[in-house]
Length: 329
Image (cartoon, rainbow, N blue to C red; front, top):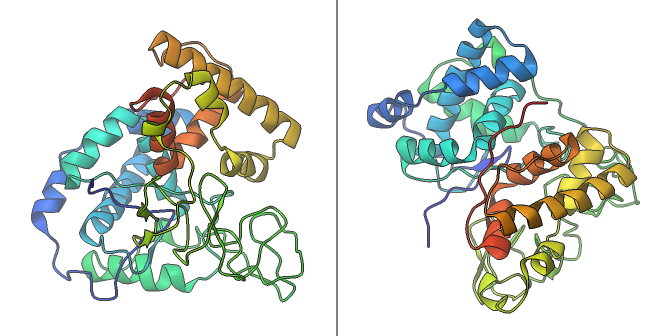
């Protein structure tokens, strides 16, 4: 089993995981990473000044440090908005991100966005996670971290912080109209969780199964004993890549397109169909440098940001990871 680390805009950490003294060897490794190309992306996309890029990249390095040195899946670790944007830019240069994760901590740091990039509804996730650990290693949080969390309140009627609608159940323990609840998973009121493939997992593993085996690994780190995910690359022999691509579940990506980017459902559906055709061409041509539309690029980027799912989808349709370099339009 690989030693990858799962983080959403939330990583899971334990109460006594921090080391109040900086682990110099880890920090030295992170300091070796060259972020010049990432800085160029941030200036191009967000029009940040070089000085702001330098400041936020330094904070991102600190966040990487906390991820690497607190990998035991017990409490939430959440980046602020600007740090999250650096993380996104780093992830989307997929080959570099993999290499840099190896340099920094010899483990891939997974990312799981919320549909709108909002922090979870419970502010204590930040207070008891990132803030607590950061201040024990680096001192007080700088201004760049403060006031950067668009946390939404959960109302008495159960309004979902994803879609703003309500089906009469509390958002933290019920299923909102958009499908997922505010804790990145589906309704657990009946102890039914949702896997990445969309089928119900009857265990209380709190999330998405990552592998189709009899002992499926959930994001919480627990083993899911139900065989709830039907996607197994080893069981797809004789099935064409086009058929496998058509089976990719991009429900979470669609919700993100509609929620964060305000796309219409029709635009999202059409774009996803175009994206799947693009993936078919990539697999057939054995090249990731094919021309594609701006909408396809946006969908590809957001698919990649769900890093565990993207990795599995690539293995299912291509037997290996499909790398990405940001396109400029």
